[in-house]
Length: 184
Image (cartoon, rainbow, N blue to C red):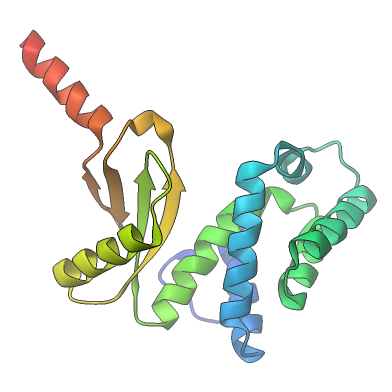
C-alpha cells in the first residue's frame, strides 16, 4: 500500500487509508464521505457521543452497542457502520476525528483536489462555500475541497489552511496585530 503523502504514518492515517481503500473497492467513496460528515457533525453537537469516543472507562461491549445504535440513528452507510464497529472493538474510537480528516484528504487527492481547512466564526452558507471554492481554485489553479470548522473565538473572517500554508483573515488576528502596533 502506498504512503499517500504521509497520511499512513499515523494510526488514524492507517485506519483512514484502509477505510478509503474499502470504499474505493466498493464504489462507495461518496457514501462514506457523506456518512463521515454526519459523524463529524454528531461529534461536534453531542457531548454524549463525543464522550463515548473519548472515555477510557466505556467497555468494549458498551462502545460497540452504542456505536451500532448511533450509526443506525444517523443513517450511516454499511461500510462506515462496520468501520466504527472495528474502531470500537479495537478501542480506537478516540481516533475517529483524525480518521475523518485523513479520509477527507485521501478523497480530495483521489479527485485531483487540494484540501483547504477553513475556520469561520459562524457556519458558512452554501453560496459562501461555493464562492470560497471558486476563489481558491483561481488562486491554486486546481479544484479545492474544503473542510469547514466553526470557531466563534475568531470573531469574524476566515482562517484558511492549505498544507503548510495558512492565511489568517480573522478579526481576532487583526485585533491582536493592532494591539501590538499600539503598544509599540
